[in-house]
Amino acid sequence: MAMPGLLSPSTAGFPIFGLLPDLLEPRWLELWDTRRPRSEQVWRVGLGHGDAAHLGPRVIVTTVPRLPETRIGEARYGPTVADDAIGWAQQSMLHAVAPEFPPDSPDRQEWWRYQLELAGWLSGNLDAEDWTTVSLSVDGWALPFRLRRHGPAWAAFTEIDTGWIAMDGIYLEATGLALETVRVADYLPMTV
Image 1 (cartoon, rainbow, N blue to C red):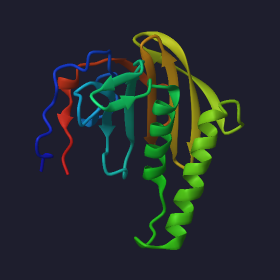
Image 2 (image 1 turned 135 degrees about the horizontal axis):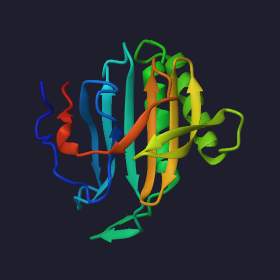
Image 3 (image 1 turned 90 degrees about the vertical axis):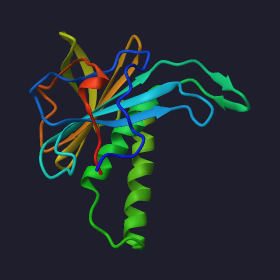
Image 4 (image 1 turned 45 degrees about the vertical axis):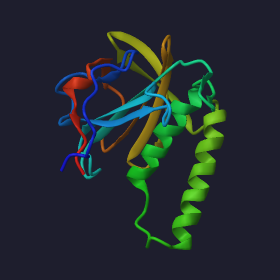
């Protein structure tokens, strides 16, 4: 069933990236994030490719535009920063590999606490040994992506003129993937 009220928007006001056609199907709109409740300004778009259930190969490509600090009514939003992309990709990667714990398990809470603290630290320490560099094609140009692995999953990101591209995937190597500017309208609303 489609998520109520989630329609594929026509444009975000900045370039959005996804995998080249036919690399991984199906494709869906994973995330269309705005600076709500007082603004419709888009500040993050995530596009899914492959198996949304994480049972087979899956890649999510998230585009975060470079936005200045803004004030909308009483709400103040800081500028977008690299960690908006890096943090999101790492959290999405962790969801793909999180162990099955009972809902209120202290082990589950401890696992998430440790993993999120580590992800936060790694976001600010891009020279740590957990990160490697891979070259991926974006609109035909080879760009360096910083990549972190966790079991069968990985998270990667790069900076571009208009902001940042973050990716996370599972059961598929990042090497050899290629991205291009895409139309969000070509992606189906996510089903739940």
